[in-house]
Amino acid sequence: MTDANKHVNYDDANQRVAIFIDGSNLYHSLEENCKRFDLDFKAFSDKLCKGRRHFRTYYYNVLRDPDRNPQAYQDQQKFLAALYSTPYLEVRLGAAKQRGDVVIEKGVDIMLATDLLHMAWNDLYDVAIVISGDGDFAYAMQTVKNIG
Image 1 (cartoon, rainbow, N blue to C red):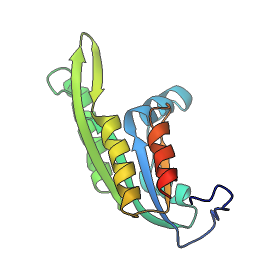
Image 2 (cartoon, rainbow, N blue to C red; image 1 turned 30 degrees about the vertical axis):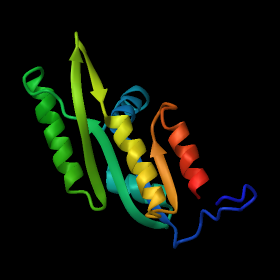
Image 3 (cartoon, rainbow, N blue to C red; image 1 turned 90 degrees about the horizontal axis):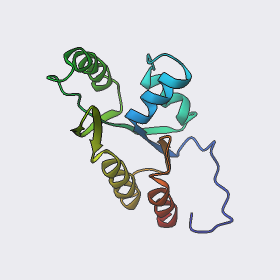
């Protein structure tokens, strides 16, 4: 894909698709726009793949603090258990740091960007789909495009 004029055929059933999900960002988007969180990640991934070969979906987030909010922690554990049982889905968890009343994600964006680049470099996918609501991954995605 180094040729800028190269046409990419998104209907090629042989293309390997990797999906990278910024879990916190997706959660807040669903909360804000849909008022629901019961997303079927297998069906969601299949829809995104559009008949192409699903290599894997990666879900990135942080663990809730069980001491700070036991109910939120229990809810997250149930959610993660469902994710762990989803075929072709891997969960990657970063650290959460408390700053006052705000929880700050540490390492999640770096994990996602590193996986995106590592897998591109090792030719593990043909198409990467990044689910995130911010521009933090723009440079990593441009680098992947440059790799080809």
